[in-house]
Amino acid sequence: MWVTATLTPQPLPSIVFYKKQNADLLLATDPDCDRVGIAVKNEKGEFVLLTGNETGLLLFDYICSQRIKHNNMPENPIMVKTVVTMDMAEKIAENYGVKTINVLTGFKFIGEQIGLLESKNVEQSYIFGFEESYGYLTGTYVRDKDAVNAACMICEMFSFYKSKGISLIEKLNELFQKYGYCMNTLHSYEFEGALGFDKMQNIMKTFRESVGNNLKINSFANKNILKVLDYNKGIDGLPKSDVLKYLLDDGCSVVIRPSGTEPKIKIYISVLASTKENAIIVEKNLIENVCNILELE
Image (cartoon, rainbow, N blue to C red; front, side):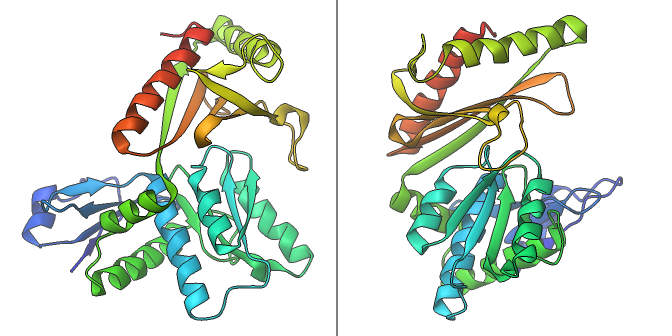
């Protein structure tokens, strides 16, 4: 049994209500129903919230496996994600022979890619798009994230695995065992006023001039910088954007960008490690090192 809920301005029933209903899966959307989050039971029967990245990975793997099973994978399948979304998605894509297209933050850029495919009459190649902030889309019928579509797919996926006696947490751990434990975190730092704006600009300038290949700083927390993606130069035909992504040793990455809507700098840390415990240590070291460079507390 599962219970679904859509967030409204009125309070939702407490977690006690769902426990009394013996719910297995909880879903909640935001008021305009374009994002969806879920909670599932762990082995102790306690509800655990999944991150947007984790739900996206589960959906993507499920869609790929079912398309192959039912022989309806398109000839040149494509998955689109934002640059700050978990890099492990690319490993799953590679396993299934799916091309990954990385776009700037914001689902409108995923929608733009659908439009480009449609203009070439190959929109059937698109099989999934998602972003770490709980936005998913499995088809080409809209140009934005859609929680109605995502909730239906989540319920289908949940039912499929439940019929086989597999929980979503067990399936997620199976993916981690196959591809490595992946952790993705977001850290935000606020800068108020005109002086704050100037400081944000200086931070981005400092990174571009001193951090990266063949520059003064070429590693974070002893992980070498293998490649720098400066989206301010307009990469892969994308619009210029003040975003820097550093690809590091061992499948790790660091993304730094100013928020487009708030006076904040956002840092995304992605870690690939053998275990969750190791990932926590690596993530902690990376964000501390980056913050030291930025002189952030």
